[in-house]
Length: 485
Image 1 (cartoon, one colour):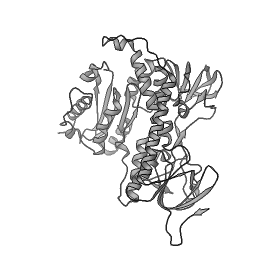
Image 2 (image 1 turned 30 degrees about the vertical axis):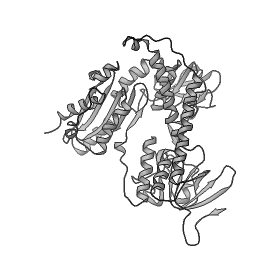
Image 3 (image 1 turned 45 degrees about the vertical axis):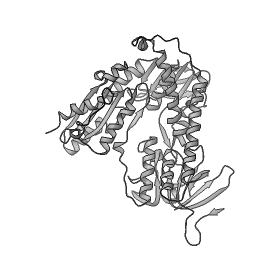
Image 4 (image 1 turned 60 degrees about the vertical axis):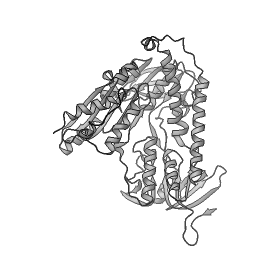
């Protein structure tokens, strides 16, 4: 059955969004609130990865396991003169906390869309040529809708490298890990990016032994090298974690035990065979785009990612495709929920005729370990390249948590902030933080980067004493001394 354009050329909807994750949700809600007739298509659970299998349940697990870690750290507590009884926890109740949070957030999100006036279409969406979307319902019935504009927000799935077989129970991805169905005595985590690090934090707090396998030549390869060095000392070496770098998990066979063949990354020769209780595969994420029928509008993906410009228009051969937009992980820009949400709002503003571009440099990122890691703006390598290209001198200063009264009051003095800036103008180019509440602290610098502010302005902003925010203030004060008068 087709519900295409009517005889007078009108559309069923102003906007159809394919995918109800964080990007699609923000796009649909923003559009509906601005008077557009909107439909959002979802084949799985409302809320996508973030709500159901990502940020939301993992933060619930990290909150609970973080409390366990705190209560079990006798040495830290003794510093306050506190002696706690041995800590006990119930795995099922921790898992229940995560599940209940997911259910609550999913309900809130669905209600928010309905209140805004969006139509929810349950089924698998794909393009059916220009300005048309086909939705196949679970029953097999397919309906075609016409829309003036179409936004693709289909997100990403965990990437499982070749040679690794998953069974969802003994070898699994973050999708299954968030349900915390059991606690393996010994678990191997493949990958040391933010997902691997967060789950290593959860598992070690709950008494599991962890082996971390990183194919690149050092652990935490995606982080600032100086931040990675101090973070690895505490989050990996200071815990029951055996970290191996430069080795590839070339074959993993599920079972009891799970067998892992580790090969040298350079020579591809077998180094060791491990037998563990479980394996978490945390080797990144891949876009969900293959069943979208992109060929019907002449769009070619780049390794599955949909090319877009900074207004979120989909590109074919470098040129925008009329009335077609894409947001979130499927674009491969910054695979973060809040980036997807920001992209969704940018797409709708452009559809509404309010031209706007996204500013990736000012979008912060965080890893919710204990303590946290965060960053915004340019990496040091990219900042050096920009300095060479634009002919300015790059400034870099470090501010330490051990000089901060609030951090010392919490007996949490281990931490570092690195600030990158232009020595000629003082413009803040980026920051990287490891330490207590780093995920909250980064926002202040993100705001400065968004406004392209100089430390010459920022240095006069008064920070509350005693707070962790003074770590940022100290960095600004150090930086301004290096800026040309």
